[in-house]
Image (cartoon, rainbow, N blue to C red):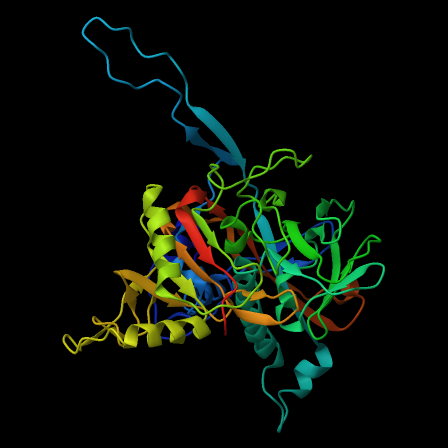
Length: 452
């Protein structure tokens, strides 16, 4: 089996392959192997099946275009036309003043997501005996692939900032159900709610996350008080859509944040925090509709305002993203508008996925104002000042300006060198290298602080 090129992977990524979860091809090892002379580790790459599975899940990942990374570590965005360079000229009038465009540089470097698994030689042998589970290594591979898929999708949909509860010297606490939005290696800043100011914490890198208790551990000493806000300003993994759709002063749980803290591959930011992204700036979202951490019901007006602001800034919404809670609330809103005509079911393609079946009159939502409505259970939820977890957010996106740049498609590495490991175990690693990028921040919008 020939090793497929990156362009072949991407071509497959754009197709809708719905026959089975892991695509039409059985997982195979390539007909080659290499040996790392430094470690002696045998490696065999066969990531095709994982790549198929990434693009055959009903996930937000599938709705975003994939592109080859290319020979670049960033790009430039024109943010100002120049003052007075265009105006009417009278018959003998002077020419407009010569001016130049304002160009901003956006840096972007690839991120790596890895998933490991292993099985002992004894368990591999006994699992094939009568009454065993079968090929335990294959089972672990399958489970690791699912975990790898889930991790990438969670990173793309991780929340940017959350209100915290009092923690110990090097910890803070968030509701357990949203703790997975914080990843080991992320760096956080702190909004001091008493001092109403930001605190930059040197070495504030997350070293541990307990998803059962909501306790997040930092590598350095700091003191988070109740109602403070922990905002992620540097991602160890993929940049999330919540990072992209933000701007200075957005209030999470009643506190404030500053999206300019994001180093991500998508934003330029100032290490001194002197230059902050604010409403109307080139790297600010078209709209962030929040309610200061107070729950309110989703209304069509919230979505209409997002669509309006994106169109005002020259974009055209291509996707409405929400959790299942808001999807069914939106369905009930449209139910009262049902006109009993055109009842045939239809669905709309979004990337390599399709929406739930709906009717053109809106009884079951498939589109709203002609824009596909896509649901994903990993969409982040808001948190109120009292630590209550609210409903999931709603995002209105122009996907023409969003892309997942792939530096390396999913690779599989296997280690059967018992001396290198120091134990009779077989270990495996799946990794994907890429980044989520945005080339038009002011063509994206979101709605926060919604009721469940």
